Amino acid sequence: MTTNLIWFRNDLRVTDNPALTNACKDQNATVIALYIATPEQWKMHHMSARQAYFIHVRLTELQKELAELNIQLLYQSCNNFTDSIDVIDNICQEYQINQLFYNRQYEFNEHKRDCLIKKKLKKSVKCIELDGNLFTIPLTIRNGKGEMYKVFTPFRNTFLDQFIQTDYHLYEQPEPRENQKIKSKKIPAFDYPTEKFEFFSPITKKALQRLEEFCAEKVEGYTEKRDIPSLDYTSQLSAYLALGVLSVRQCLHHLTQEYPRFWENQKSGAFSWFNELIWREFYQHLMVAHPRLCKHKPFIEWTDNIQWKNNKDHFEQWKAGNTGYPIIDAAMRQLNQTGWMHNRLRMITASFLVKDLLIDWRWGEQYFMSQLTDGDLAANNGGWQWAASTGTDSTPYFRIFNPTTQGQRFDPEGIFIKQWLPELKQVPTKLIHTPHQWAEKVGKPLNYPNPIIIHDIARKVTLEAFEKAKKTD
Image 1 (cartoon, helix red, strand yellow):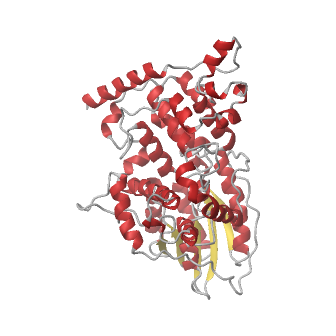
Image 2 (cartoon, rainbow, N blue to C red):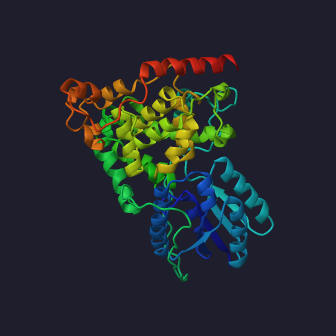
Image 3 (tube, one colour):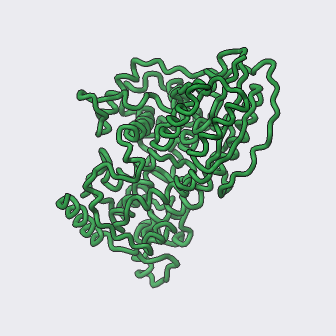
C-alpha cells in the first residue's frame, strides 16, 4: 500500500491546493499531512509575533478541516530549514512514506532547503513538487531576449497574453478518505513570541466571505477609492495570500464570477485589483531571477554606495509614529496596533524613512516584517525597493514624496489621521496636516511632537546623497 505525505508550508488550505489534491488522487493510498515550525528561521526572517499567532490559529483550523477528510496533521518543530531536512527524513522513515507532495516556495533559502531534501530522499521517497501559490511558474515569462523583465508594464503585457490563453481551474477539495482513522493532537504552543489580534480570521469560510464581498461590493469602486485610507476599499486579503489560506486562483475565480472578461477594460476597478495581483507575481518572479534580492541587496547596484545617515533617534520616532508629520504618524500607529497598513500609506511611510530621514531602506523593510501579519518577503522587499528607488521599475530617486501634501491628497478631511492620532482631534480640518500652525495661531500647546526634520531641506540632502552615490559607481 502507498503512503503519501503532504507537507504544508505557506499553503495552509484544503481548497485549491494542488499538493493536497494530487496526494489524495489514489483512493487506496494512506495520506498523512505535516507542518514543521522553524522558530529560529522565523527569527532570522524577522517574522512578526502577529503572523506567528495567525499561523498557529490557522493550523488549528486546518487540523479540523483535514480531520473532516480523515487526514491526520502531524506537527513538528525544529530550529531552522537545515534541521527540517532531518525531520522530514525521520517522518518518512517512521511512517514508511512512498511519496512526498508539496507546493513550491521560490525564495532562496526555501528553494535551497527543498533541493537538499530531494537529494536526501532520492533513493527512498519520490518528491512531487507542484505550483500552488502563483498564476505562472517563475522564469516562464520572458522578454524577446529570453530574459526576465526588469520593468513591470511589459511583464504585465506578456503575462496577460498568456493569461488569456490559459484555463485557470480550481483544484477540487479531496473527498474524505475511507478506512482511514486518525488521532488528532492539539497543536502545541510555538517556541516563538505570539501576539493575539482579530484583524484577520483564521476560518476559511470567513476568508472566502471577505473575498466574495469584496468582489461583489467594492471592486467596482476600487480604482477611485483604493488610495483613500479612511475608506474600506482595499481587499484586505494580503495575510490570506501570504500564508496560503486563499490562493490567487480563488481570487481570480470570484473576480470573474462578478466581472467576466474583466481584462478587456483596463480602466475598470476589477482590472485595477487584478493588476495588484500581477505586481505580486512580478516580485515573486524577480526573486527567482535575481536571488540577491533575498540577501538584502538592492536591485540597482550603485545604490549600495549611498551614505545613509541612519539616525537611530529618528528611526525610533518613525517606528513609534512620533515624527510630527500626521499622515506618517497615523500610518505607523495603525501598523503598530493592528499589524496591517493601507498600501498607499506603506509607500508614503517608506518614502519618508528613506528620502526624508535618509535611513537605509533595509531598516524599514525589517521593521515592517517584524510588525506585519501579512509579511511576505517578495512583496515587502519589492515595495521597499520601489519606494527607496533601489529596485527594478522603482520610482526615480529624484521623486520624493512631500509628507504634508501626500496627507492632503489622500486624507483631505483628516478622517484617518484623527482616528489614529486622537491628540489632534481638536485641530480644524483645514490645518490638520499642519497642526503646529494652528497651535501657534490660537496659542494652544499641542500634545504632539514638532516635525523631526524640515522636508525641503531633507529633500536636498537626499538628492545630493543619491547623486554622489551614482557618480562613485
